[in-house]
Image (cartoon, rainbow, N blue to C red):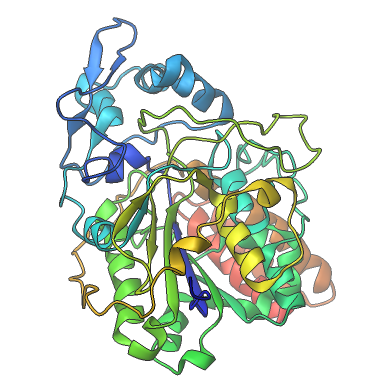
Length: 446
């Protein structure tokens, strides 16, 4: 077995879709069985709602996925998905309720399915806890959410906490490993306060595509991509955004890496979703190792629902990997690969996928070339922000206080803060105001 040939790791984490929904139709996976379609009882009738193929590219309602909801969904096991959705959205018809059980047929997601069948699908990759976006994203960055399982619950009552845990980025810096975070509009990872010492490592997505055209030695050794979370350009696949917007982002990232032959020969591209977003998956999440002593809100002794996970590299053969992974498996691989200091008990106990990258004597020459970029519809305008958007807006208000504290004697800056506050009161202006706050915070810390 040869040494690990990967010199660059690129991670793209999308939002809120389950494994069965996105990849369950593909050959060889533990997914949808057309001869034995599974059901959930409807609510309140109890009538069976079956798995079914879907062509819907957006889901009008955002299924709930807080801790209590997920525990209800996976109870039975896994027979509470439709019930939980119906209880939160009692006015929806059967067609929308049945979308909770829906899956994309083979080829219906042309980019994701092409890459999945051309490389390695991990069909037992679980989200790190049965809960929402933020805590699961904390696990992919740090191996813990410091015991917090809930999303901040509103713009003006944000329920924000101090997320000051060590991160994989600190560990990389300690070892002199170059890293960067590329983002569409507002990187969620900046919520972790230790990241504020590394704000020069944050770059807009345009800079990713520029860097991918250059020399491999100039490209980060570890790159994490955060999609666009707000507005018409939203491409995170969070309902009600068009899933093809995420498909387009995935194609553009793959193409950028694939077109630079020297870079591609040394790269592992990992595609993940943070959590299942309330959509059905039939595999009950197994037990897990708690990351630390922070167990007041939840024991952290169980994984969350399965999510799509693909390992893409010329060093990996097309296959379905059956090992049990969660988001900390990525950290385990990185810690082992570069000899980093550990990141808690969950990471230490996690399974690494590193062995699957050391089984070839030479890189493959049969990987897909340029993948067509699908045309996506703009994200629909909605009256309410989703939970992640709400939380980011709430956090932007916290950043505004930091700007005000640092510029307390600058009347021009204080006037700008006032104008942003007034603008944020306008309908539909929360997102643009949050992004403006972030940009000013980054300028202040530059």
